[in-house]
Length: 461
Ligand code: DUC
Ligand code: ZN
Ligand code: ZN
Ligand code: ZN
Image 1 (spheres, helix red, strand yellow):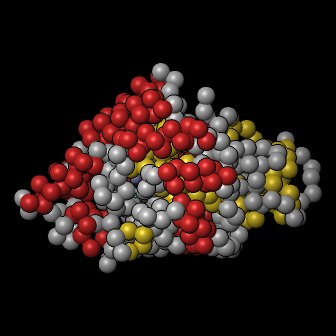
Image 2: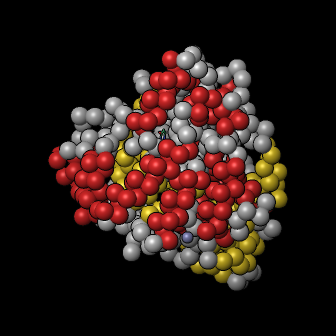
Image 3: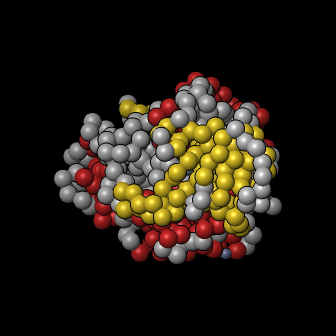
């Protein structure tokens, strides 16, 4: 089976140029001068459109257990929504429950995902127990294609790791070619602020933001960076939301330390004002770290331009308003943490191109090429080049759309971006050579997506 994508503007992280893209089987066979005569079974007209590498969302939570409930997207619904939005690879977090083994956790996540994904997928591992067994098992995770290990400085008593535990895990990561991913918020201090708020009868969703000040993200980020420096471990800060945290990352990067950070669309577009919406509407915007006052947003865009923020992932973690977010009525600390977004990352970041915050090439870089290199998937993913997987998005830069829960494909009953007008729209999506989305709708299949074993972070020096 061969497909020719004709007449588009090919955009890679390294540049944009008019070219036709020939796909043979599951891979890109050639980039051709426009109009170069070639036979193909199927032709896709990309005239007036961008042709970009499929998006890679390096941070999702499908079917994630949380306080007796689960995030609302299954691997089937979540990866289908990803495909609709031009994301052709996700990296989801396997969650070690305390007292269980990392390898059993991996098996559990494979049982949920294998045969159930519409696009390709990999895993990160959340390490909840730092003990000799888990540390030893991290080696087996690397052999199984999972070399990124998330830890938490937040959530005492649940996922929280002490500085000593973080130090030990970082030493191990350094030894085995792994990268530690950090949820950097000072959970010990936050828990005190939360208890004080509840004792004073402050129970609304906005208190979630007020009890998690930006300074405590900045402090934890600095501390994680220091521990990484002492151990020589690479460090990837997940879901960075605050200017103070960005400052810490920027300082470390300026010394040449292997420190990397991602932010998420919600921190670029939403703010504490959303958390303050009345009638419990604010619960739709509860995620950790919390949405920040608006002035942080311009700092984050600047960080994306300077590459102190290297990646934008969604932290897609959908909980329905009805019955799930509502668990926290009367106590904001019980609102399930998470915002849905896997479907709209490419569109939301394209607004950055439209508004002149980032270049066209940078859009591709932060949403696909850098995640591919950071998470050991490049050059198979993240680039349009001969030999790469034919994960390709034809994107119409001028089409208009309005984001709404009434039309999205995620299995969640609200959109955090309800009513937002977007310039640009996914036209056609190929996953490993197969058209999975086009004008006629979803043409892919649950089960088409394959597990990706990942190699070393290519940015390490
Ligand atoms: N951290 C995440 O990365 N996702 C959901 C909640 C959290 O604290
Ligand atoms: Zn987190
Ligand atoms: Zn710098
Ligand atoms: Zn997350």
